[in-house]
Image (cartoon, rainbow, N blue to C red; front, side, top):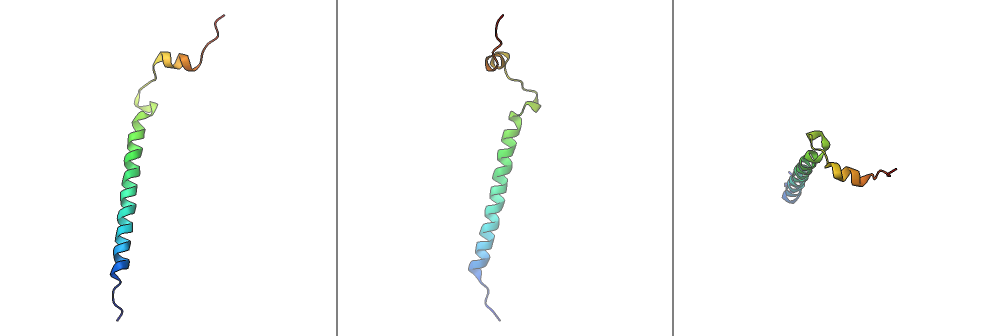
Length: 58
């Protein structure tokens, strides 16, 4: 009977843990960027919009 390779098993557990942690980090980062979208009802200030696109005076 072959002996168990504990180092391999540990490495696999560590890799799985790392993947799960990375997915969690990405999910949290995604959640923090979502509220910045205009879908939440926030609109930019009116004067900031005017400064971005100047209208020539006639």
